[in-house]
Amino acid sequence: MVIMAITKGLVYRANNKIAKANEVADTLIKAQPLNPDFLTFKGVLLLQQQQWSLAVTAFEQVLSNKPGDFNSLFNIANAKAALGQLDNAKSITTNLLETQAEYAPLIILDAKLDRDMENIPLAIEKLSKLTSASKTNIKASEALVDIYTQQGEFESALNELDKLNKV
Image (cartoon, rainbow, N blue to C red; front, side):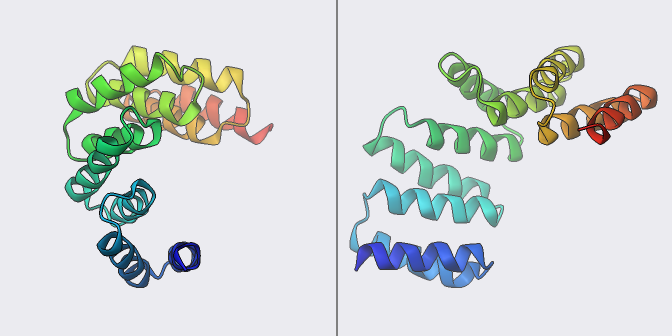
């Protein structure tokens, strides 16, 4: 029954029927309020709806049952970045990078935080290193193009786009 319910919720989410997916998540959490899988599902839905503070709360509840859970911490960092709590988000990404130094989405988030905290050279360095290591990391290239464009370095942005076209 529970597996069918969570599967149903995931199908609703995949089909962008967020209200229905929320109903499923709420029903599951009502039945098992401390279940980390159900709380994670709800947290992801909240992120998708850009309800950052509520998402943080959901993932913090997961951490109370699964201390140090990488995905929860990563999602909290994303939500806190969206809330403008850059120092808090940066603290989380810095700690996570100690054990997950090669995880590209984490590196990209960390670099974006560097950018938002006005450390542009460090952000460019991290993203350039990532794009050099993986020519197909489109998200890293997009972030790098965005930074170059914001800085008025249009030639560098075009060069990065040219690299993507060669992939």
